[in-house]
Each structure stands twice: as structure tokens, then as C-alpha cells.
Length: 514
Image 1 (cartoon, helix red, strand yellow):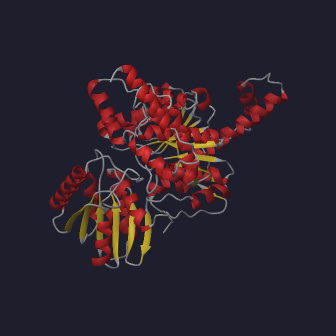
Image 2 (image 1 turned 180 degrees about the vertical axis):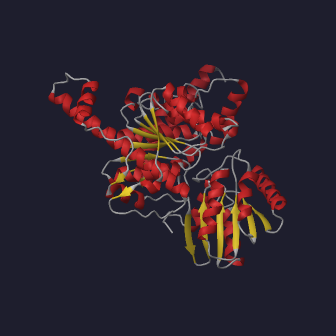
Image 3 (image 1 turned 135 degrees about the vertical axis):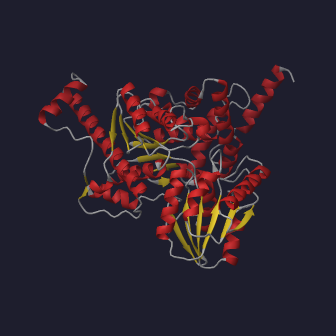
């Protein structure tokens, strides 16, 4: 085909594609999304760039995609954001931060990944997942804008990049007061790091994860995560290993932003008392970080509101420095770290729901313990949590690990749990048949996924040698076996959020809290 002929054909295909949002369903959106280049391909491209020394173009690409949907960087600057990176607990930290801010009366947006049951979980308004028709309508608008501005066929964002563009469009159009944005992978070249003006940044506990992309040492990983710090922002983190903390301090100094280590959760004073449903130390560390992030954002929001009011009163003839000096002189500057929590903050912590993490569900045929642990440290915490909460003698494990993760490293902490009667190694999809209309569609070959399960089974046999080992092609098969052969059993489901999501889509598709 000549270039002219190709151009005409491409134009016709674009004209034929365009669909009105009234006819565009949630299932249509999911199918279109799944046809975009997968996260697996994205990660492989980043690895290739690292090997060949090529410059990663993620942020340049994101700027282009946003512009094609009508969002300039200056428009994006108007979005007030709490940006959260880290290895462990960034999802639960972000969720608690959002809940606290919402309880204080702010209109919130929340962008996180991955999803458990449905992709629309990744974008939330006022604590609620976008409704199916709402997701479809926004998806259609953004997809049409990007599809109609392609310079060549296939000039579309990758899966995660598209959802990031979609989230920013939703938050701007819905005029949220604050958006809590969880980093996808790393930080410095993550698509979410297109954000230029971020008042508050959080970095959760650091560990070794995505080592083929972020580096093989803790300092390298800390450097990647620290890339979300912006000049003049307020950054908060938890106690880190010295080699990681040194990197974070250097990074904050380089961009001239403050870096604050949050206090121990047990040191807070509570106006109305506080009882978290999870008593694990790691969860409480995340809660402390969420408290400081949310209160820092509120303090800065109040300061900005006072500044705006004063500018109006003085006809704009005043500088930021003048206001800060006045507040300091009057002794009205709020402390950077809060130590006493209001009833709204306590309520925000209590009412925060984050399924799939330290999640217990009771059914008529067993009790399920679900945790999407996928790093060595988080798996150690998961094993501790399961032991502390499990009362049953009979135990079963359902396991799957995805991506480039070291499965043997994940399995070793589970050796500390006294005897799993049976261990199921499963492909992390709900059912064997997965179509491109499925929220948890995987582009990986079935044969490759099954081979990975068999490798994990061999690792467990070498480590343990006692449990019965079963390799199955979907989560539904494992749950059926549990129901038929292991009544009144405690079942631990862990190793991957994709696995947990597949299990929840069968056990508890509405994501109610057990």
C-alpha cells in the first residue's frame, strides 16, 4: 500500500472508530484498554532502555498524551496533589491519607494501582470507585481525543500511561480539592511524575523490588523513589535503613525541599481515642505517615487560603515572604509534625477500607486470609499476621508470583508457618477462560504462566517437602478444591495482588470488608 493509500485507510478507520459516549459501555472501555500495550511490555521496554543506555521517554510521552487530551502542564499544575512512592505500604498509606482528608470535608480524588476486581477501582472520587457508566464516559472522551490525534497507527499510550492520563482528566474536570496519587513503579521516570508542582510528598518503607528496573541495592532504589521530590515541597518518610535515608536526605537537599521523619504511632495523643483494626507495626507505620501527609496538605491549604484572602484585601500588593513573616511574628505558624489528632482524623483512620491487604473473609466453607504481599519484607509481615490471626489447625496456601519477582524469596517467610496441608500454585486469573473484555486480562501466554507455576511448585518442594503440592490453571479450581476437600480450613492467599483480586472476584466481588 502506498503512503497515500495508508493515510486514507488510517483516516477512515479513525472516522469509523469514533463512538458517542452514550453508546460506549464499561465493557467496551475495558476491551479498548486491554488492547493497548501491556504493563509487561512497558517494563520490558524500560529494561531494554537501561541495558542499551537509551533515555527513558516516559515523561515526554506523558506530556504529549496530556496535551492531546487538552491538558497542558500549566493546567496540571493547578491540581493539588499528595504524591506517594515507596516499596511497601504505599497503597494503604495513600488510602488512609485520602480517608482522613475526605473526613475533614475535602473533595478528594484517588489514583492507585493495581486494581483487584475491576479496573475502575483505580480512579476514585470522594472515596468511591467511579461508577461503570461514569468510567465509560470519561474513558470514551479521553480515548477519542488520543485516537483522533495519532501521528501514526498505534500512537497511543500504554495501559498504565492511559489510565494516568484518564485520572488527571477526571480530577481536573471534577474539580477535586486534592488528589492522592500513588506512584506506579519507582518514581523518577514513573508516568505520574509528570506532576511538576506537588506540595506534599510521601515515601513509604523501602526494600528490594523491581530490581531489574530500579537497581539491585537499597540506595539505588531510594534514589529512584526520591525522584518524586519537587523543589519547595514538604517530603515525609518513615524510619529507613541508614543507607536509604542518606540518599533521601541528599535528594531533598538537592531540590531544596524539607524531609521529615514521621513519629512512632504510639506517641500520638487522640482526642477521642483510636483503635485501628490492624495492630501490625507495619500498618501503624503507614498510618503515621498518612496522618502527617494529610495534615501537612491541610496546613498548606489553610496557608494558601489565608494568602489569597490577604492578597484580595491588599489589592495584590503583597509577597509570599511578607505573609510568612507576619505569621511567624504572631506565632501562628503551625508545626510541621502534628502530635495530637482530631476526631475527624481518628474517624478517617477507622473508616478507611483497603481490600486485599490484611483482609479476612469468612465463608460457609472456610476462612480466607488475603494479602497481596509481593516483596520479601511484606511477606514476612503477612506470615506474622496470618499466624497471629489464625485459629484453625488445618491450613492451606494459595500462591502466585508475577513479574520479575524472586518467588523463592517470597516463599521462604511462609516456611515459618507450621505446616500447610496443601499448597496450590495457580495462574492468577479467576477462571481459565479470560477474554479481552475481562478486567484482569493478561497478555502473557497461558503456557508461560503455567510454566511459572510449576517452577514455583518445585521451589516449595525443595524448601519444604511436606505439603501436598497442586498446580492449577485458575483460582476458581483451587477454591473448588478447598470447598470440596478442606472444610473449615484457614486459607492464606498471597504472593500477588493479581492473585488476590482474582480470588476476591469469586469470593467477594463487591469488595465488602470481612
